[in-house]
Structure formats: C-alpha cells, structure tokens
Length: 440
Image (tube, rainbow, N blue to C red):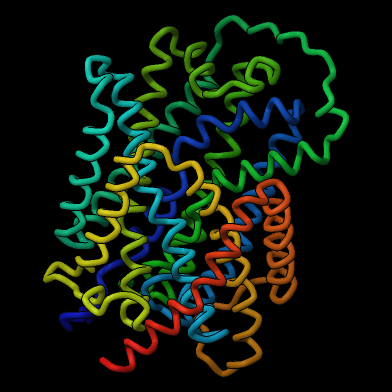
C-alpha cells in the first residue's frame, strides 16, 4: 500500500527500477577508458579477463551483504542505517556524512563530463561547458522534483538505451572482418617483472569501474516489497554489468592486439575507429553521453536519500524530512543540487575525489562489520534474505576493505590526515546536533 504521510517516502518502486539503478549507477565512461590502462599494466589476455571477473565476484559478495542489511532494515540512506543500528548514533552519523559526501560530488563531476562530450559533438559550444553542465544539473533537479516515478522511468529508459548501445558495440567488434592490425612491438618493462603489483593496481581500477553496484540499497524504503525485490534486482543487475564488462574487454581484444590498446586514454575510441572507420570516435562519444546521462540520473537521487534518512534522526536540519506531493525529499534534493552547483562553478575538485575515496572505503568496511555485529547482537531480527557464504565472505570483504584503506593511506597520506582531522572534529558537531535535537 502506498504511504501518503507528508514526511514519508512513497512505496512505488520494484525490480525493474532496482535493476535500472544498478546498471545506470555503475556503467559509465570508466569501461570505455580503463581497458587501455589495464592492458598497459598486465599485457596478458587471460590476466585482463581474470581481473574483470574477480571484480565481478567482489561485487556479488558485496551484494550479499547489502541485500541482507537492506531487506532487514529497509530504510532510505543505505549504509548509514546499518552502521547506526549496529554501533550507535555516532558511528551512524560519521558513516552517513562520509557516504553522503562521497556520493554528492558525483553529480557535479558527471555534469562537467557530459558538457565536455557534448562539445565534441558540437564544437561551436566549446566555450560554454560550464553553462551546459549547469543546465544539465538544473534540468535533472527539476525532473526529480516531480517525483520518484518520473525519475524511475528516466532511469529505466536510459539504462535500456545504454545496454543496447554497448551490445551493438560488442556485436560490431566480434563481427568485424577487416584487416588485422599488426601488434606494436614492445620491450619488457619493469611493470611486467612485478605482475602481482600490476594486477592489484588493475584490480583497483576495475573496482572503481564497478562502483555503484549497491545503489538499490538507498531506495529500500521506497520499494513495494524490499524483501523480495532488492536481492533479485541487485543480482540480476550485477550479472548484466559483469557480463557486459567481461565481454566488451574480449571484444576490444578481438579487434586490436593488447599492445595497440595498452595505455590508450580511450581504448573504446581506438577500437571503434577500426570497426566503424573515421566515424568511430562519434559512435563512442554518443555511447559515452548516454552512459553519463543514465549515471547522472542515478546519482541525482542517491545523496538526497542519505540526507533525508539523517534528517529524520536529527543529524541534519528538520526540514530535511520534507517530502513533496510527488514523493521527493525536496529539501535534501535542493541542498544536494546546490552543493553540486558550487562544485561546478569551482571547476576543479580533484582533492575532494581523493577524500571521497577514503570515505567510501570506510563506509564499505563499516557496513561489512555491521553485518557480523547484527548477526550476534540481534539474531532474532527478521532477515528476508541472508548473505551467502557468511561469515567467510564478510570476513574476506572486511580484510579487503582494510587492505584498500591501508594502501590508499600509504599512497595519499595528505588525504588520510584530512580524513582523520574531519573524524576528530565531527564528534563535537555530533554532540551539538544531539543537544539541538533533544531540545526540539
């Protein structure tokens, strides 16, 4: 039954949205760019395919955790709710803000990237990238202010178009019968001598390309039947993404030798030029635009759900719980859009991306630990779905998250110190918000 309370989200989503939000929130420009970098580091067909396959296995294990937690606690905001339930208000507070920040910068980035690709299609607009980026941000803000139903329709349509375009590119690659390209002769490098290091660097890139796989958990509260729909949609969506990622790498390597793709900043364009001729770059640009539109639509919805969930618990302004007649958390949507607008105007926010990586890893790790904690502390809590391979898969994910965190801390000590400082300063803010919330 649809929930019509003024400050509660509407339960109108289903499996099709869950699949679309995972595909739309995951497949972006990364899969068009990263194959070249990975080919440059690994220089072996089966190592490359294995790397993408392992990334897919990581996603499937992670989905087991998120599916159990999201169906057990079907609330808006994803990880924030699980960590809060397991470790208390402060842990939830810092997790929520970390998760919000790491997701909220994405719309600004995607608007800027869309504007850059549109300028490739229409060179006359070269000096208008900021205006185009802001126009997309405003347009999608207006779209989502009209309700989750319209956002869901756009997500499903854009995700279907995206998949169709990738399938066309894959088929074109495998059916290409033109002149075979001679491999570029390559001398042995230092990276080839340390295959393990190269493999883990490649896996890091692969995981970045898979990022967005847990998107459905943010919308559990708006699902008609989360216990049934969320696991089904997450696994089906993941299998589509994993299949596309593995097969498209096979397709690229079927057209061009590894040495010709290696270190290319846009491997898909190199392949498309061989398959489609001079129009190849145009084909890839069109695919990129549709991919980014779909992923932008997804990331316009996610941050507002996190902030709404936190507002409800007193960790943001009380008006953050306001839902308009169409079922949109309108205040948190506008706040998130204003944040993205500021980032677009600034233009450069590489430092923020470094910080968001640390925050995302922290959120993932705490989420996996939360599953174990809640299994012990609340064994009788209703669990419509249980994570497969527990506790071994959970322990594996915790160790992997810890290894990633240590690796990033070692390679980017400045961001690590900033995150540490933010964490220390967050506690007084948390206390102030709790005092304010208790007075209201």
